[in-house]
Amino acid sequence: MKDKLRKIALTNRKNIKNKKELDQNILLNLQELKIIKQTKNILIYLSFGTEIDTYSIINYFQDKNFYAPRIENNEMNFYKIDGFYKLNKYNIKEPTSKLKINDFENSVIIVPGLMFDKELNRLGYGKGYYDKYLKDKNIYKIGLCYSCNLVDNLEIEEHDIKMDLVITEERWSFQD
Image (cartoon, rainbow, N blue to C red):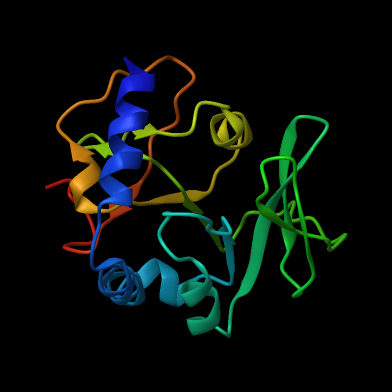
Protein backbone atom coordinates (compact mmCIF):
# COMPACT_ATOMS: atom_id res chain seq x y z
CA MET A 1 0.00 0.00 0.00
CA LYS A 2 2.79 2.46 0.88
CA ASP A 3 4.55 1.80 -2.42
CA LYS A 4 1.33 2.53 -4.30
CA LEU A 5 0.92 5.83 -2.39
CA ARG A 6 4.54 6.75 -3.14
CA LYS A 7 3.91 6.32 -6.87
CA ILE A 8 0.75 8.43 -6.65
CA ALA A 9 2.58 11.18 -4.74
CA LEU A 10 5.48 11.24 -7.21
CA THR A 11 3.04 11.41 -10.14
CA ASN A 12 1.13 14.24 -8.44
CA ARG A 13 4.34 16.21 -7.95
CA LYS A 14 5.47 15.56 -11.53
CA ASN A 15 2.16 16.91 -12.84
CA ILE A 16 2.33 20.24 -10.98
CA LYS A 17 2.33 22.99 -13.58
CA ASN A 18 3.05 26.04 -11.40
CA LYS A 19 5.77 24.59 -9.15
CA LYS A 20 7.76 27.84 -8.76
CA GLU A 21 4.65 29.69 -7.59
CA LEU A 22 3.72 26.94 -5.12
CA ASP A 23 7.29 26.80 -3.79
CA GLN A 24 7.21 30.58 -3.31
CA ASN A 25 3.93 30.32 -1.37
CA ILE A 26 5.44 27.63 0.87
CA LEU A 27 8.41 29.94 1.55
CA LEU A 28 6.01 32.79 2.39
CA ASN A 29 4.09 30.54 4.81
CA LEU A 30 7.37 29.45 6.41
CA GLN A 31 8.44 33.09 6.84
CA GLU A 32 5.35 33.75 8.96
CA LEU A 33 6.15 31.10 11.55
CA LYS A 34 7.19 32.44 14.94
CA ILE A 35 9.34 29.36 15.61
CA ILE A 36 11.29 29.95 12.37
CA LYS A 37 11.79 33.62 13.22
CA GLN A 38 13.13 32.71 16.66
CA THR A 39 15.27 29.67 15.89
CA LYS A 40 19.01 29.80 15.32
CA ASN A 41 19.57 26.47 13.54
CA ILE A 42 17.57 24.90 10.72
CA LEU A 43 18.19 21.31 9.69
CA ILE A 44 16.96 21.00 6.12
CA TYR A 45 17.09 18.60 3.21
CA LEU A 46 18.68 19.68 -0.07
CA SER A 47 15.88 19.36 -2.60
CA PHE A 48 16.18 17.47 -5.85
CA GLY A 49 13.84 16.49 -8.66
CA THR A 50 10.23 17.43 -8.01
CA GLU A 51 10.72 18.13 -4.29
CA ILE A 52 9.76 21.48 -2.81
CA ASP A 53 12.63 23.91 -3.40
CA THR A 54 14.64 24.23 -0.20
CA TYR A 55 17.44 26.33 -1.73
CA SER A 56 15.15 29.38 -1.75
CA ILE A 57 14.55 28.80 1.98
CA ILE A 58 18.29 28.61 2.66
CA ASN A 59 18.91 31.76 0.60
CA TYR A 60 16.10 33.71 2.27
CA PHE A 61 17.04 33.06 5.91
CA GLN A 62 20.62 34.29 5.81
CA ASP A 63 20.73 34.90 9.57
CA LYS A 64 20.29 31.18 10.34
CA ASN A 65 22.74 28.29 10.54
CA PHE A 66 21.72 25.57 8.10
CA TYR A 67 22.58 21.88 8.35
CA ALA A 68 21.85 19.26 5.70
CA PRO A 69 21.80 15.46 5.87
CA ARG A 70 24.67 13.22 4.96
CA ILE A 71 24.43 9.42 4.88
CA GLU A 72 27.43 7.58 6.30
CA ASN A 73 27.46 3.86 7.01
CA ASN A 74 23.70 3.73 6.42
CA GLU A 75 23.12 6.37 9.12
CA MET A 76 22.00 9.96 8.61
CA ASN A 77 23.55 12.96 10.36
CA PHE A 78 23.31 16.68 9.66
CA TYR A 79 26.33 18.82 8.79
CA LYS A 80 26.68 22.58 8.44
CA ILE A 81 26.05 23.90 4.94
CA ASP A 82 29.14 25.80 3.85
CA GLY A 83 28.59 25.83 0.09
CA PHE A 84 30.59 22.70 -0.72
CA TYR A 85 28.79 19.50 -1.69
CA LYS A 86 29.26 16.00 -3.04
CA LEU A 87 26.69 13.64 -4.57
CA ASN A 88 25.71 10.56 -2.56
CA LYS A 89 24.73 7.14 -3.92
CA TYR A 90 21.15 8.42 -4.48
CA ASN A 91 22.56 11.32 -6.55
CA ILE A 92 21.52 13.81 -3.85
CA LYS A 93 23.77 16.68 -2.76
CA GLU A 94 25.36 16.36 0.69
CA PRO A 95 27.48 18.94 2.52
CA THR A 96 31.19 18.11 2.80
CA SER A 97 31.57 20.06 6.06
CA LYS A 98 32.92 18.27 9.14
CA LEU A 99 30.78 20.37 11.53
CA LYS A 100 28.00 18.03 12.68
CA ILE A 101 25.10 19.37 14.75
CA ASN A 102 24.71 17.64 18.11
CA ASP A 103 22.90 20.29 20.17
CA PHE A 104 19.28 20.66 19.09
CA GLU A 105 18.29 23.48 21.42
CA ASN A 106 17.04 26.47 19.44
CA SER A 107 16.72 24.29 16.32
CA VAL A 108 14.02 23.07 13.95
CA ILE A 109 14.14 20.40 11.27
CA ILE A 110 12.42 20.67 7.89
CA VAL A 111 11.54 17.17 6.75
CA PRO A 112 10.77 15.99 3.23
CA GLY A 113 7.79 13.79 2.57
CA LEU A 114 5.88 12.34 -0.32
CA MET A 115 2.56 12.56 1.54
CA PHE A 116 1.30 13.77 4.89
CA ASP A 117 -2.02 13.22 6.62
CA LYS A 118 -4.20 15.37 8.83
CA GLU A 119 -2.70 13.78 11.96
CA LEU A 120 0.76 15.00 10.85
CA ASN A 121 1.95 11.53 9.85
CA ARG A 122 4.46 11.32 7.02
CA LEU A 123 5.07 8.99 4.12
CA GLY A 124 8.73 9.16 3.14
CA TYR A 125 10.73 7.46 0.45
CA GLY A 126 10.88 4.16 2.35
CA LYS A 127 14.47 4.05 3.61
CA GLY A 128 13.59 5.13 7.18
CA TYR A 129 16.49 7.58 7.56
CA TYR A 130 14.41 10.39 9.05
CA ASP A 131 12.45 8.14 11.41
CA LYS A 132 15.69 6.64 12.74
CA TYR A 133 17.34 10.05 13.02
CA LEU A 134 14.43 11.72 14.84
CA LYS A 135 13.65 8.81 17.16
CA ASP A 136 15.53 10.13 20.22
CA LYS A 137 15.76 13.82 19.38
CA ASN A 138 13.79 16.63 20.93
CA ILE A 139 13.48 18.98 17.97
CA TYR A 140 10.53 20.77 16.38
CA LYS A 141 9.62 18.96 13.14
CA ILE A 142 8.14 20.74 10.11
CA GLY A 143 7.02 18.78 7.07
CA LEU A 144 6.79 20.41 3.66
CA CYS A 145 4.17 19.18 1.23
CA TYR A 146 2.16 20.27 -1.77
CA SER A 147 -1.55 20.22 -0.92
CA CYS A 148 -2.16 17.72 -3.73
CA ASN A 149 -0.32 15.18 -1.55
CA LEU A 150 -2.31 15.68 1.63
CA VAL A 151 -4.56 12.79 2.58
CA ASP A 152 -6.97 12.12 5.40
CA ASN A 153 -5.16 9.08 6.80
CA LEU A 154 -1.87 7.32 6.20
CA GLU A 155 -1.16 3.81 7.34
CA ILE A 156 1.48 4.25 10.03
CA GLU A 157 3.84 1.91 11.79
CA GLU A 158 5.21 2.02 15.32
CA HIS A 159 8.55 3.53 14.24
CA ASP A 160 6.99 6.37 12.17
CA ILE A 161 7.66 9.84 13.58
CA LYS A 162 4.92 12.50 13.46
CA MET A 163 5.58 16.10 12.50
CA ASP A 164 4.74 19.02 14.77
CA LEU A 165 3.51 21.03 11.79
CA VAL A 166 3.01 20.57 8.06
CA ILE A 167 3.24 23.50 5.67
CA THR A 168 1.69 23.58 2.21
CA GLU A 169 1.32 26.33 -0.36
CA GLU A 170 -2.18 26.99 1.02
CA ARG A 171 -1.70 27.11 4.78
CA TRP A 172 0.87 26.63 7.43
CA SER A 173 -0.82 23.79 9.14
CA PHE A 174 -3.58 21.58 8.02
CA GLN A 175 -4.24 20.33 11.53
CA ASP A 176 -7.18 22.35 12.85
